Length: 470
Image 1 (tube, rainbow, N blue to C red):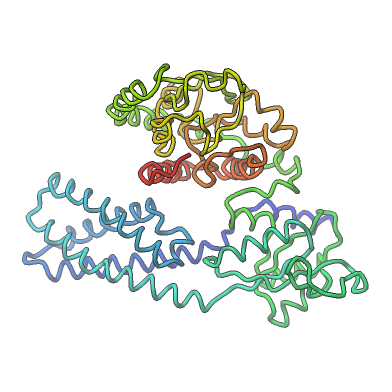
Image 2 (image 1 turned 180 degrees about the vertical axis):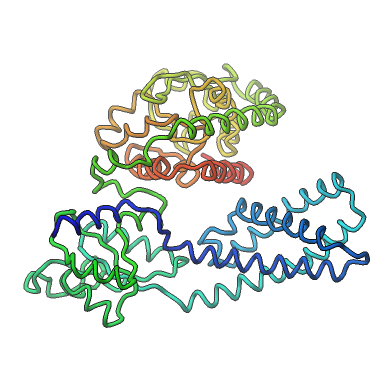
């Protein structure tokens, strides 16, 4: 492979500038906007009083922004929601509840005589339009699928194929893989791990020209592997989408495929680590959320404290040494959910759902994650962030890091009360579960944004109300 082409592929491997699913989400948002405008026009026509053009445009803009924020917060623009009727209806019901509360506030803050009637008319038109629009989009999108050919047989190729198969909402289909450089070396069965082998890697241009695939995804084992550089570059210049297997895997699963991850990728990844401004923004978000959470949860903490005291002997709060940023130890504060002196004889062990040391009240506190609320004090102290990797115990750190070498990379950011790994995978009960946690935490570190933190906090709130903790 030429040096210039290797640079092109290397840049593409780490590039996230192009989201292969962005057009799908953007189209849905555009259709939602059309429905909103139609609903606003209908509300204006049905109104008993005349509304000026200026007032109409301002109200429509406010309605559109508010609706998009609420729909985004309830997961209406997640790919899995877009392609699932049941999830769409649940998201819409949640949006209705939030929207109704916001409408009441708006009505009393801005007491326009016609605002109540206009909102009712707009909602009556928008809701059925929204459901019909999403149903029509799902019907059309199911007819359109992007076919993928994988270039290079590897563990990544198999994992990516399985992830795509498990996510029918993506509209993707793996038609086969190209492997090796010589036809003589190909297996006679032409099927490996359920993936058809279409030929050698040098047949990629032929596969695309025969209209067997729409996308090309490079899943080679090593960057030095002999790839058809001229063919790949020619296809890319002719508009054929070419993606890195690792990048596409991250997009689909929300985690990093770290088994084949090289340290050089993390060293030269400018997304690892925050700028001074980003740290300032995140700290401001942490302080604001922590103060609000402690004030709002004060009555809940009071009731929980009484329940703990009545249920079992011991202190109300539980303090334990955890590892913070750059491996600095700190004392985490939680509500006690286990019997007093739970590790006096066993030492440090992993907790599980069926752990007999958990008290009756503690089981409820864990399922609702109310036991985590005192950690917002750690956030105010600067030991933790609202969102980040789970703080681990020093007793387990060496064993975990020896098993998974990149685990210590997590210490580059403050641990969090909640996090990307917690909301997607819950808690782990043994050391094997940390591999998936690491993949999720690395994804968070490489893709951090304030909007991502807000989304994780919202997902955590939904988990609390659905009692989906551990």
